[in-house]
Length: 262
Ligand code: COA
Image (cartoon, rainbow, N blue to C red; front, side, top):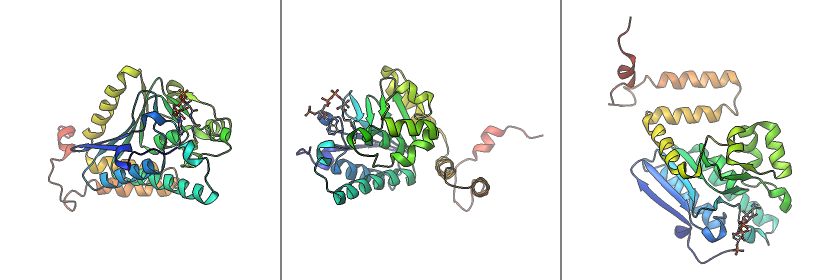
């Protein structure tokens, strides 16, 4: 179902120096992903890629849901052609997050179903409340996950659990999602914001270029033979020492940590 709000109403962006906070604002629809939300999120990610953002936190409005899925009302009368375009729009967002030169953090409370689970998985880190509910219920609606779920699940939780989630629509609590490796951190609900801030602080402590290289290499490892991955790692490791050509004027972090040699 659509509403009269604009893209800017539905995707609210606040930037504070290196941190961009994005809130999906459709509380009455449990933040369901319609075309406006998908486009608004993709624009926010692309913009953040050029404005010095180092961490993006994506949240849902209200207490009940991160995102309760793709907008079912909108999909009800889709033709196959419209469904293809909608799926591709979702993929554009997931790819933008994948390639983004910053770390994305999904702050998940309540429902993260269907497209909500996929959006969370497309983020680099998921920080979840115990009250979170993850799942891919699409098969029950005669669908399959359309925003990358079939391609991201196994990387997060392994083939066995991925298959269980995809073919049965089984739901996972925040604690179970953490035990199975779907989420990075889980916490009591009242501590969720504190844990998100701890996560941000942990990311910001790292040297920016090193953090982004680490993201790139870890992601790449899923799709690359071990030998090539190691070769790529060695080149990146060497690049970390190429401070002069990168024009970096910062103090060398190795000097601060290394102490006396010999
Ligand atoms: N798309 C569009 N609207 C949605 C939605 C979605 N994915 N999920 C929830 N909503 C809307 C509901 O239609 C309802 O609107 P209404 O008040 O106008 O009737 C509102 O959000 C609140 O949802 P409601 O179902 O009343 O809340 P609940 O607490 O009883 O149940 C859920 C919450 C998440 C379990 C239930 O809404 C649900 O199963 N949603 C669909 C989840 C899903 O299948 N997602 C994958 C889609 S591919």
